[in-house]
Image (cartoon, rainbow, N blue to C red; front, side, top):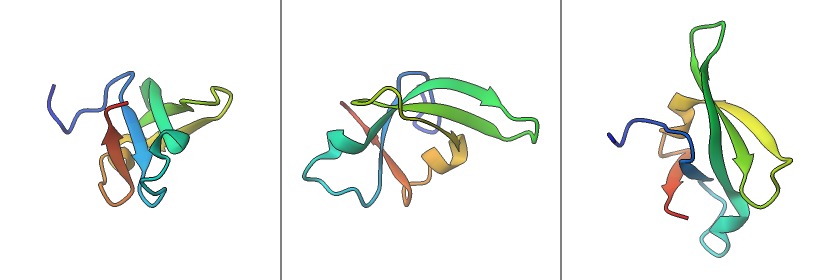
Length: 72
């Protein structure tokens, strides 16, 4: 897998959440899709509270100023 690809089950941590409890803000990719605007999106679920869902552009997930991959 290339590092630039976003795949189902990848995990990401938002930058700025701190290193003390990264699991507290870890998000897992649960769906990938192309929006009607032509942008590639990822649907994310919080790893500790699966009711917390958000959708973000895949390009934003790959922007290291916003998110970093998590091995957890």
